[in-house]
Length: 219
Image (cartoon, rainbow, N blue to C red):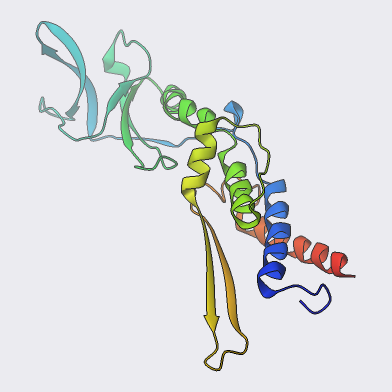
Protein backbone atom coordinates (compact mmCIF):
# COMPACT_ATOMS: atom_id res chain seq x y z
CA UNK A 1 0.00 0.00 0.00
CA UNK A 2 2.78 2.41 0.94
CA UNK A 3 5.19 1.79 -1.94
CA UNK A 4 2.66 1.19 -4.75
CA UNK A 5 0.15 3.83 -3.59
CA UNK A 6 -2.65 1.24 -3.59
CA UNK A 7 -5.68 0.61 -1.42
CA UNK A 8 -5.78 -2.43 0.87
CA UNK A 9 -8.27 -4.03 -1.53
CA UNK A 10 -5.98 -3.58 -4.56
CA UNK A 11 -2.86 -4.67 -2.69
CA UNK A 12 -4.39 -7.85 -1.35
CA UNK A 13 -5.92 -8.69 -4.75
CA UNK A 14 -2.50 -8.30 -6.38
CA UNK A 15 -0.92 -10.60 -3.78
CA UNK A 16 -3.72 -13.14 -4.26
CA UNK A 17 -3.04 -13.17 -8.01
CA UNK A 18 0.61 -14.12 -7.44
CA UNK A 19 -0.35 -16.87 -4.98
CA UNK A 20 -3.00 -18.35 -7.31
CA UNK A 21 -0.63 -18.24 -10.29
CA UNK A 22 2.05 -20.00 -8.27
CA UNK A 23 -0.24 -22.81 -7.07
CA UNK A 24 -1.89 -23.16 -10.48
CA UNK A 25 1.52 -23.76 -12.07
CA UNK A 26 1.97 -27.04 -10.13
CA UNK A 27 -1.63 -28.25 -10.46
CA UNK A 28 -1.87 -31.33 -12.65
CA UNK A 29 -4.44 -32.30 -15.28
CA UNK A 30 -5.95 -35.80 -14.95
CA UNK A 31 -4.74 -38.46 -17.38
CA UNK A 32 -5.87 -42.04 -17.85
CA UNK A 33 -2.51 -43.32 -16.61
CA UNK A 34 -2.79 -41.27 -13.39
CA UNK A 35 -6.01 -42.87 -12.14
CA UNK A 36 -5.40 -44.81 -8.91
CA UNK A 37 -7.97 -46.97 -7.14
CA UNK A 38 -8.06 -49.17 -4.04
CA UNK A 39 -10.12 -52.35 -3.76
CA UNK A 40 -10.52 -54.72 -0.79
CA UNK A 41 -11.84 -58.26 -0.83
CA UNK A 42 -15.03 -58.85 1.20
CA UNK A 43 -14.76 -62.33 2.70
CA UNK A 44 -18.29 -62.16 4.10
CA UNK A 45 -19.87 -62.27 0.62
CA UNK A 46 -19.60 -64.38 -2.51
CA UNK A 47 -20.91 -63.84 -6.08
CA UNK A 48 -23.87 -65.85 -7.30
CA UNK A 49 -26.84 -65.72 -9.63
CA UNK A 50 -30.51 -65.14 -9.03
CA UNK A 51 -33.27 -65.88 -11.55
CA UNK A 52 -35.74 -63.16 -12.44
CA UNK A 53 -38.29 -63.57 -15.24
CA UNK A 54 -36.32 -66.56 -16.56
CA UNK A 55 -33.18 -64.43 -16.75
CA UNK A 56 -30.10 -64.99 -14.61
CA UNK A 57 -28.85 -61.92 -12.80
CA UNK A 58 -25.63 -61.46 -10.85
CA UNK A 59 -26.06 -61.05 -7.10
CA UNK A 60 -24.11 -61.30 -3.85
CA UNK A 61 -24.89 -63.77 -1.08
CA UNK A 62 -23.72 -64.14 2.49
CA UNK A 63 -20.86 -66.62 2.70
CA UNK A 64 -21.88 -69.95 4.25
CA UNK A 65 -25.54 -69.54 3.27
CA UNK A 66 -27.90 -68.98 0.36
CA UNK A 67 -29.22 -65.68 1.70
CA UNK A 68 -28.91 -62.78 -0.72
CA UNK A 69 -27.11 -59.62 0.31
CA UNK A 70 -29.55 -56.72 0.11
CA UNK A 71 -27.24 -53.75 0.60
CA UNK A 72 -27.60 -50.55 -1.44
CA UNK A 73 -24.18 -50.80 -3.11
CA UNK A 74 -24.28 -51.26 -6.89
CA UNK A 75 -22.93 -54.68 -7.92
CA UNK A 76 -20.84 -54.84 -11.09
CA UNK A 77 -18.81 -57.60 -12.73
CA UNK A 78 -15.26 -57.50 -14.06
CA UNK A 79 -16.05 -59.23 -17.34
CA UNK A 80 -18.33 -62.17 -18.16
CA UNK A 81 -17.86 -64.92 -15.59
CA UNK A 82 -17.89 -68.50 -16.84
CA UNK A 83 -17.35 -70.02 -13.41
CA UNK A 84 -18.21 -67.93 -10.34
CA UNK A 85 -16.67 -70.48 -7.97
CA UNK A 86 -13.25 -68.89 -8.50
CA UNK A 87 -14.56 -65.32 -8.21
CA UNK A 88 -14.76 -63.10 -5.15
CA UNK A 89 -16.55 -59.92 -4.09
CA UNK A 90 -14.42 -56.79 -3.76
CA UNK A 91 -15.40 -53.44 -2.27
CA UNK A 92 -14.50 -50.17 -3.93
CA UNK A 93 -15.32 -46.65 -2.70
CA UNK A 94 -15.16 -43.83 -5.21
CA UNK A 95 -13.66 -41.23 -2.86
CA UNK A 96 -13.43 -38.51 -5.49
CA UNK A 97 -17.13 -38.50 -6.39
CA UNK A 98 -19.48 -36.08 -4.64
CA UNK A 99 -21.53 -38.91 -3.12
CA UNK A 100 -18.47 -41.13 -2.47
CA UNK A 101 -20.43 -44.11 -3.78
CA UNK A 102 -19.33 -47.59 -2.65
CA UNK A 103 -19.46 -50.47 -5.14
CA UNK A 104 -19.35 -54.25 -4.96
CA UNK A 105 -17.22 -55.74 -7.73
CA UNK A 106 -17.37 -59.43 -8.66
CA UNK A 107 -13.98 -60.35 -10.07
CA UNK A 108 -11.61 -63.32 -10.48
CA UNK A 109 -8.61 -61.43 -9.06
CA UNK A 110 -7.61 -58.16 -7.35
CA UNK A 111 -6.09 -56.87 -10.59
CA UNK A 112 -9.34 -57.50 -12.47
CA UNK A 113 -11.29 -55.74 -9.69
CA UNK A 114 -8.95 -52.73 -9.92
CA UNK A 115 -9.37 -52.59 -13.68
CA UNK A 116 -13.15 -52.54 -13.27
CA UNK A 117 -12.91 -49.85 -10.59
CA UNK A 118 -10.84 -47.70 -12.96
CA UNK A 119 -13.58 -48.05 -15.58
CA UNK A 120 -16.07 -46.69 -13.04
CA UNK A 121 -14.12 -43.51 -12.35
CA UNK A 122 -12.45 -43.05 -15.73
CA UNK A 123 -15.32 -41.47 -17.61
CA UNK A 124 -15.94 -38.82 -14.92
CA UNK A 125 -12.30 -38.01 -14.25
CA UNK A 126 -11.42 -37.61 -17.91
CA UNK A 127 -14.66 -35.76 -18.59
CA UNK A 128 -13.62 -33.23 -15.95
CA UNK A 129 -9.91 -33.25 -16.76
CA UNK A 130 -8.45 -29.84 -16.01
CA UNK A 131 -11.06 -28.96 -13.39
CA UNK A 132 -8.54 -28.58 -10.54
CA UNK A 133 -6.52 -26.06 -12.55
CA UNK A 134 -9.64 -24.36 -13.87
CA UNK A 135 -10.89 -23.85 -10.30
CA UNK A 136 -7.80 -21.77 -9.52
CA UNK A 137 -8.25 -19.84 -12.76
CA UNK A 138 -11.84 -19.17 -11.74
CA UNK A 139 -10.69 -17.76 -8.40
CA UNK A 140 -8.32 -15.49 -10.30
CA UNK A 141 -11.18 -14.43 -12.55
CA UNK A 142 -13.51 -13.76 -9.59
CA UNK A 143 -10.81 -11.69 -7.91
CA UNK A 144 -9.68 -9.63 -10.90
CA UNK A 145 -12.79 -9.72 -13.14
CA UNK A 146 -10.58 -10.64 -16.09
CA UNK A 147 -11.02 -13.82 -18.10
CA UNK A 148 -8.28 -16.42 -17.58
CA UNK A 149 -7.94 -18.65 -20.64
CA UNK A 150 -8.06 -22.45 -20.19
CA UNK A 151 -8.62 -25.05 -22.89
CA UNK A 152 -11.50 -26.81 -21.12
CA UNK A 153 -15.14 -27.53 -22.09
CA UNK A 154 -17.97 -25.30 -20.86
CA UNK A 155 -19.19 -27.88 -18.31
CA UNK A 156 -15.75 -27.84 -16.63
CA UNK A 157 -15.86 -24.05 -16.34
CA UNK A 158 -19.38 -24.24 -14.89
CA UNK A 159 -18.28 -26.78 -12.29
CA UNK A 160 -15.23 -24.66 -11.42
CA UNK A 161 -17.53 -21.72 -10.81
CA UNK A 162 -19.70 -23.82 -8.48
CA UNK A 163 -16.84 -25.18 -6.34
CA UNK A 164 -15.06 -21.86 -5.80
CA UNK A 165 -15.99 -18.98 -3.53
CA UNK A 166 -14.83 -15.36 -3.50
CA UNK A 167 -15.75 -13.27 -0.46
CA UNK A 168 -14.71 -9.84 0.78
CA UNK A 169 -14.99 -8.77 4.43
CA UNK A 170 -14.95 -5.06 5.26
CA UNK A 171 -15.03 -3.90 8.89
CA UNK A 172 -15.01 -0.14 9.36
CA UNK A 173 -13.68 1.40 12.57
CA UNK A 174 -16.09 3.09 14.96
CA UNK A 175 -14.66 6.55 14.37
CA UNK A 176 -14.78 6.18 10.58
CA UNK A 177 -11.02 6.31 10.16
CA UNK A 178 -9.41 3.17 8.77
CA UNK A 179 -10.75 -0.32 9.41
CA UNK A 180 -10.03 -3.89 8.36
CA UNK A 181 -10.29 -5.65 5.00
CA UNK A 182 -10.05 -9.37 4.22
CA UNK A 183 -10.23 -11.40 1.03
CA UNK A 184 -11.41 -15.01 1.38
CA UNK A 185 -10.83 -17.42 -1.52
CA UNK A 186 -12.12 -20.97 -1.15
CA UNK A 187 -11.45 -23.92 -3.47
CA UNK A 188 -13.97 -26.56 -2.37
CA UNK A 189 -13.04 -29.17 -4.97
CA UNK A 190 -12.69 -32.52 -3.19
CA UNK A 191 -9.39 -33.39 -4.87
CA UNK A 192 -7.89 -29.89 -5.00
CA UNK A 193 -4.84 -30.96 -2.95
CA UNK A 194 -4.60 -34.39 -4.61
CA UNK A 195 -4.16 -32.67 -7.97
CA UNK A 196 -0.99 -31.02 -6.68
CA UNK A 197 2.13 -33.14 -6.55
CA UNK A 198 3.31 -32.78 -2.97
CA UNK A 199 -0.10 -31.75 -1.64
CA UNK A 200 -0.24 -29.24 1.23
CA UNK A 201 3.56 -29.00 1.56
CA UNK A 202 3.82 -27.99 -2.08
CA UNK A 203 1.11 -25.35 -1.60
CA UNK A 204 3.13 -23.85 1.26
CA UNK A 205 6.23 -23.84 -0.95
CA UNK A 206 4.37 -22.14 -3.81
CA UNK A 207 3.04 -19.47 -1.43
CA UNK A 208 6.63 -18.71 -0.34
CA UNK A 209 7.66 -18.43 -3.99
CA UNK A 210 4.73 -16.09 -4.57
CA UNK A 211 5.86 -13.92 -1.66
CA UNK A 212 9.35 -13.69 -3.18
CA UNK A 213 7.76 -12.61 -6.44
CA UNK A 214 5.69 -9.96 -4.65
CA UNK A 215 8.80 -8.57 -2.92
CA UNK A 216 10.60 -8.57 -6.29
CA UNK A 217 7.79 -6.58 -7.91
CA UNK A 218 7.89 -3.97 -5.12
CA UNK A 219 11.70 -3.74 -5.31
